[in-house]
Length: 255
Ligand code: 3PY
Ligand code: MG
Image (cartoon, rainbow, N blue to C red):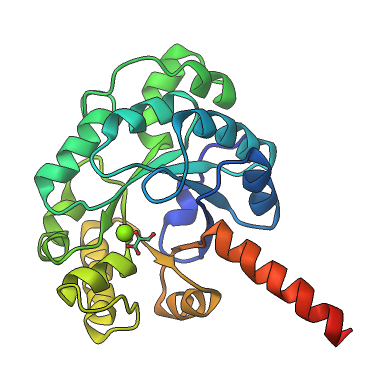
């Protein structure tokens, strides 16, 4: 398969990523073939495990879609293992300061940027690269995205964005709402969350790094397209399944 199209994350076009919480490789393949440019296998709040990531990366490759993995908070060891088996990038939740960003980068980028340990068994065969070529290109081929989703992360967004090895930012609007309203509400349209979107976009622009955002619904995704986000993660798959099932039933009576 093609390496992760990092170019698609440059400012300009919109890259749609299908967000998956289920572990079946059939789900990965179906969502990728529906037209998403990449998928995310979610090991933080979704059900992804290392075994399902091994299968999910292969299923995504069948559909020519790079697979990202969202890690459980702080679990950078799973990040390095996911890259070893061919994940095209990693998403680290709850990054709140440069020190968090550096710990993430340290585990998942090879020297001189980080201290990733050598062992990309399947990643090399998936990409068709020999050892030297993989070593020379892995830091660029594999994306490290830092999630900004807390008040503290927002306060430190500039230093996080500037951290060497962080390839981009991903906004988690649900957690941002929880954090910025001190637990009062989960409202991705809350004025404080909307204001934060602009702040993170500005930090990305000044650091020369793309800013992605997670969308709970197609309507939110449309709004984020209008705001100019270059990458929008839409999901999760369970919501696609529920919406499709509801529509199938209602269509019976509308036909
Ligand atoms: C959030 O919105 O908090 C996320 O983590 C997206 O899944
Ligand atoms: Mg979150």
